[in-house]
Length: 122
Image (tube, rainbow, N blue to C red; front, top):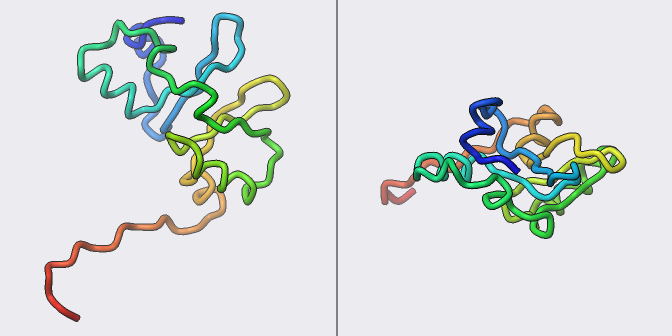
């Protein structure tokens, strides 16, 4: 497992990606590294930290087959610590998915937080 700084030098973090799958030395999936954790580690001067030490372990991340219906995936995402699931094809990891990904794929408008109230009564 390489260091975070080294990994990001060779492959910059895509801006639209919230998490990346992490594999062990044998190529088996071992967890998920979130953008938030990676950014915090780099900002905190922990770029020399090994990726596997920063990644969420698989016990905290749902693993789903790519053919699973989206309606079945949403409840699983609610149990994920990072709100992300690993997507597999057979034994291979092919990506990650979040609730925002499912909303975008369905063509639904993104939910926006309600505007802050200024204390005025309605």
